[in-house]
Image (cartoon, rainbow, N blue to C red; front, side):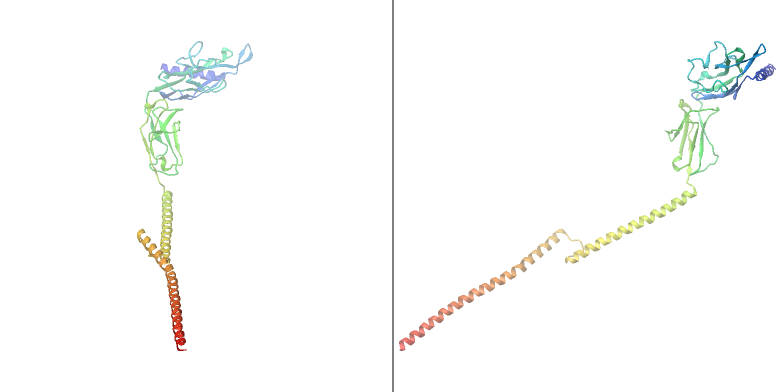
Length: 343
């Protein structure tokens, strides 16, 4: 009953704030985060424009915005996780809003101590413009929860050319998650909670895992992704196989013809020089060459021998002729002496 009465009271407060044009709206009233992750608390506000002072409207201007942890009013000297007028705010708490309508807060590298309720407060240049929505946003921190991978498509078979998205999730709902993706144990460049693969190829097949970037204890179980070849790929492989086979056959045929021509040319050369078209031993070739050289030398020596024989015959003829002349002269002398003696 008390809870119900409190809800009615808060509803009345919100209606009253709306009546004077002053609101703070949290998109979420509770959320969870894993230690080491990043969580965003969406928030919008509408400041009060003016207030009445003695029948005169006095304009208001927002001069301060802040977020507090586990404090209902978030006023005065209450510690703040973020204060736009303070330079000592924890850098893990990033204010993504402004001084007009946006009051979103982001918590990076979530720690166990962030399990708390966070509230936004705006302050104007007059206390009439101050306002805090006490509802706040409650954050629950989970420690070392293992991730799991969810596939965007329920189809069991994936073919080349298709598109698939892998989601790194856990029991908590993440607004922004910095993770490390792995394929077969090797880190990928993607750091977001989703991994989009498009278009799929055979190289995309493998075991995928994911973990928080700053907390490897949250590493998920391996998710096996297998990409099957499509019908078009089968036809393409067949065509490429046939083309490759024909090309290889043509190359072998040309090579065979070239070798045959070389052998025939070698045989013709051997026959032209009177040799055996088959390959001969180097010693046999050397002996043939020597026989050829000796034959040529013998042929060259035969004319010289004929000339020598002619010269020798000529000399013999001359000698015999001279001896005949000497015999003839001696015979003439004998005849002459015989005639002289008779006379």
